[in-house]
Length: 271
Image (cartoon, rainbow, N blue to C red; front, side, top):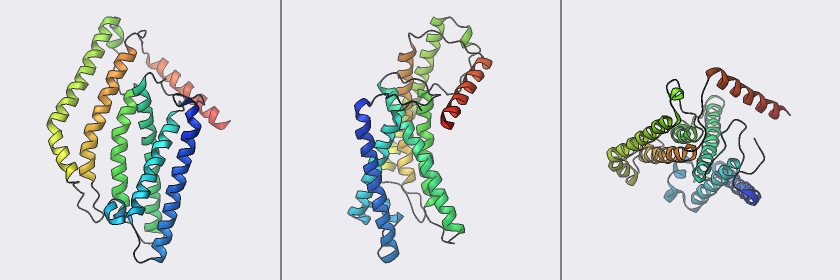
């Protein structure tokens, strides 16, 4: 990771402090909930965590603290550019980087949740009712957010054999056609899925299990939002790349460049 600030500048330190503060509050509330679960018969569990009306103010405070921790952690981490990441260009590239950091943090949360489930199940013989569904819920969001990051990094699979033989004006034309197809797909998806998505969201359609999270009610709308963000990123890429020099791709050159970047990153991590 490069230490140079991408967009926060002098705000990097306040954002870092806010991230630490919200994380500390989250951990303190979690510790209180654990102690309460041990000594109280009226303990707040994961059932109440997705039903704030039943959990009361402490659940609301926990959710606010978690949201703040995730938001400021994503902002702080997005201010660092990875060694093999493309240089951000424009406001929406920064938005995509923040969202990508949220997805990366979410992957770590999935690992923690599944580790907790394995220990609870095989060490204490006390499996949870929520770990599998929570990991599925988070993984669905990660999958959607990763598409936007891949678009921002221009890392979706592309076939360059014909594209590289085109003159620059024809490359631009093909880029415009590609973006128009993405926009068309987005509008078709919204036209066909909006009513169903908003209906599921308004009634918070649940999963029909013991924990019963509103997974269908949230993921269906999240699909539309994620595709919308990918579409905006594709338009942003088209504008940013319009006046750039044409690129010509060779499989050998790409492999060598990527290997060199990976090697440099590993050397920096070891030092």
